[in-house]
Image (tube, rainbow, N blue to C red; front, top):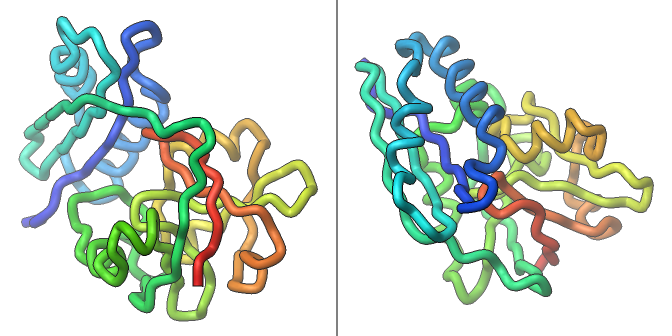
Length: 208
């Protein structure tokens, strides 16, 4: 029996509704099929019920377990200031590219929590993780993107051992990003962005 649940984190805005809803529901359904969970048929109903009467932007957390149970919690969402640049550092904790569950967003987050705990919030806004080959994979809560001036962002392939992020999927489908391996030297020669569906793209700088 699985000791974890599938997880989706969404943003809801009063005027536009759920951000990237179709991609979130598609990932949830795809993930459930891949690991033998039931079909998440009532996820949308639960999401809609969670925002009834809401008047301000919300962060929505949805979990779905092996028994088909859905749980939704909400919290106020505060956007980052427009001029925000995140300081990022590299974790010594490594991801295992052979771990197929890294490609699916779940509540199984011990490796990410270990990496995040290597630095205080004052030392780093986000912590990047490498795999056993030294390839850059992702942040603890974000995908990574590099801008080398070509006009198209680069983001690591899923095979490196990382989550198929919703923002990442959207940018690839829009041809604003393409898949390509990222190594440490690439971080020094390109503009860095991290991001997720909740907050979008965030400019970042590597701090040593």
